[in-house]
Length: 409
Image 1 (tube, rainbow, N blue to C red):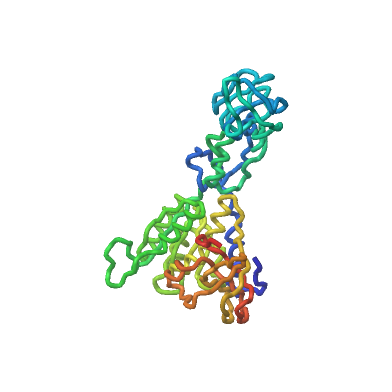
Image 2: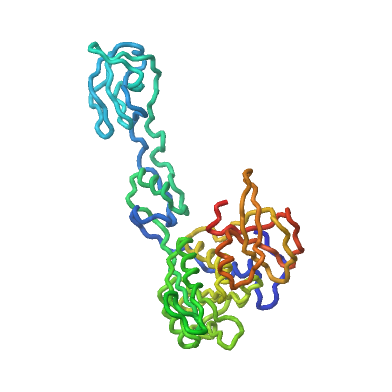
């Protein structure tokens, strides 16, 4: 990702500087062995090598008859059957053929298979057409050979890779332990979904959204709920969260209002700030620090701002803990309509990314970028990155784009 080179104001880090400071000291977590049934979505911690050839012997690719190709065409005597899981133990010698099913082992002596539709059976034997060596035969090791690296360390395990691991004979796989992310919000104005809110309250959506994002990235998330607007209450909840997690995420309470108590509460727990604020829009109040109990990421209170900054900062932290590349993946896309000039903070605009029949990417920023609008974020599948002090960009210009999880482009 290209980054702005202009220095940020004192105490105000650029996005790149902030991400670098946050990632300093964050390492891949320990390895654990997990049963194959439970590895979906986990990150492989070591290469998986084949213990034997697959298939482990020559097998038939069709239902038919195994034979010696040199004896075709001709009339052959049926001497037995080779079925999948139950091979023919004799020898397919001169003048003989063996009935064979798909996936069954090729009998000793045979080198070809004739499909059952191409033969004629009579009381005298089986009339065979001309065949060639290797016809309808899958050779031993044609899928993979013993010792081959089937799955590389760092791969996120999906259904196909789980199937391949099972084909290698593995019953369990070494995976990186899932990072435990504790999520705490504060604010007397927040009510839990499903309850009856007070006259001045809104529902808490940010903790649920951030937790869902973390799980989608391969981490484990648990919500600490909403603490009162009180330093002691926030400190107590934060301390418990730090003790039980690899990273504490605090949402809100870090602006300049009279009721923003998050940082003072964490200071009681020995917080040392590494990032005070970030020159980003939305999300300037984002911060990061370390306590004797573990690291803390502070996200803005507005849910949309929190989720934008989660993509920029929390996602790389989770990736680093999983041993994956934390650098965001950036694409280039063509603007579907013009963008106005940007100001002194790097701007990430919620956008809609699509591709034409030729595969060319186009992107359109939503008109309303108010940081409180969750509905706009829900409609977006990408973020356009506008550098600091970027000039107005006309339709047709190329811009940097971060695709979100929902993007199918």
